[in-house]
Image (cartoon, rainbow over all chains, first blue to last red; front, side, top):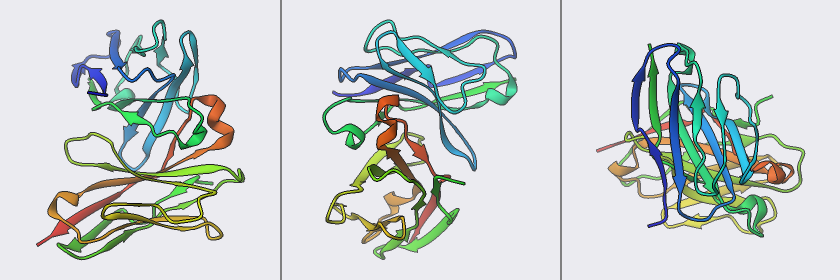
Length: 116
Length: 118
């Protein structure tokens, strides 16, 4: 089954304790992104990756890191989480394909993070 | 200026009735795509429908259709024959062609919460 998986789905942590949210897709997609969703703000892009070893900042990258060592995986790292990073996080992937901006983004199930 | 504007924070509709969710967008790029996603209470993002800026016809997918008015920069989602399972948050999103080289970033609106009643 074609899918984007994220782990963990729920996480409660404390300020300053490093954490990693994993993301994996089995569709051989080149593009992967991380978004955060906050009430009244919709989804905002944190980081994105065009392919292996190619990553760049999105709209709200402060406090986050990413890596893309393999095509299928795109982990999100919070080196020193703070309460303002409490949010719902989504990983997404899409083909680079000839459709260009037509290519649909497929989202993972989301990770609910609470930083105390 | 907001790139995607959804002015209806919440909507109610009776079962079996049609409902229109509004979305206006702002771009100077002649090539862009508009997407609608559904987010039920369980939280996942479900792709519903896509409209390209050069598409001649309005997109349709089953009970979903997109009322695309390019000159007015609006892309309203129409759900026909509403069902209780349609109760969810709905997001309008846009990808501009200039962002194709930036891993296809989607810019989202703030969403509309739809509640279907008996």
